[in-house]
Length: 241
Image (cartoon, rainbow, N blue to C red):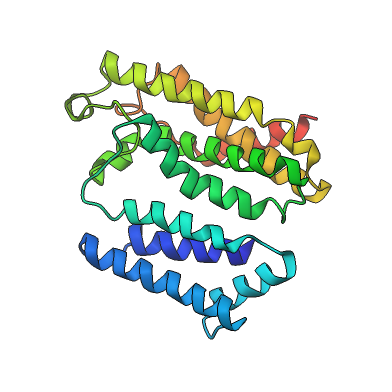
């Protein structure tokens, strides 16, 4: 888990980190170098880079489908655009399939999910990312990014219009559906993994609750949970069986 996180976090730092390079071309070139480092490590079965070395080792021991990281990197390259505009739901789904679903598919063997449920683990990852996009509409807009289709720039500038609230409500409903449909996955995981996934679902459900209580205003009101709220949501999730 740590090795996989190290690699995807490395890509995220290239795209969004405080020391990221200026300009689309420079960031994409840095992503290409990061992907090439992994390719060399996989071919040679070792690497001098500690993150790549750890991931190559984990991939070999746990038979992880690391070739899928090419799909992840494709989504990261989209984040290098200036500005980022996802205009259709199909494009949003394609982005999330490359990023969140891909990571879910690689994590599924580590979670010891049965083979026929690997795709459900991937869909659970999409539910998490879609909730993040709902929560972070205002933050992403500050970075000149619009991930949720149908959010007009004029609405983002002027506040939570009726049209903006309707589009956000639609995506909240989609996230709710994904969480509901993937709920059976938890009990199919190895016991040591169930609590962590259950806590994550509980915290993210609380984020969606807050968005609904705010009448889907994700521009002018607080959406992110305070630390104590996250802790309470986590504790509540652990009590549910």
